[in-house]
Amino acid sequence: MADPKKKKLSPVQQQYQELAKKREPRRPVLKNCLRAFVSGGTICLVGQAIQQMFIHWGGFPKEKASNPTVAVLILVSVILTSLGVYDKFAQWAGAGSAVPVTGFANAMASAAIEHRSEGVVLGIGGKMFKLAGPVIVFGTVTAFVVGICHWLFG
Image (tube, rainbow, N blue to C red):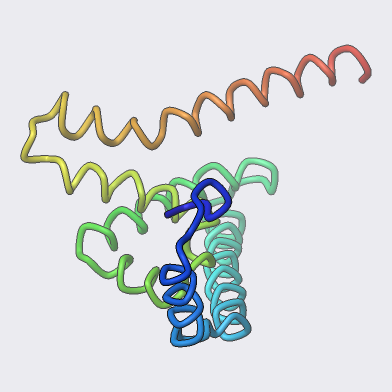
């Protein structure tokens, strides 16, 4: 029952809802927020360290070092997902592991791994892009709108 306003509850159902609400364990919101902050920040810190390595040892200019950094983070995320490590980390970290680009790569790789038995096109491709499709479309449309605004006003 998603919306209690849509359905009138009997007195017994209301009583049960109250009892279930009392017995429901409290969520550790502060602890979850702290874990998300620390884990997301650590991922970003690792990304910054990788970017600095590309700048200092790879000879990349500061403006061009971000693309290979993102590629490395995606590659590491996919490798850790295929080994089953990233999912355990994500369970502990919560939203902190889902927000950076590594979370998106994990979601894509997980969908591909889960549906590989259905074939390359309908399994891996179809299920993987079921998740990625809306993200790619929204990103493309947003980039187009921002580009038009920049062209008109910039």
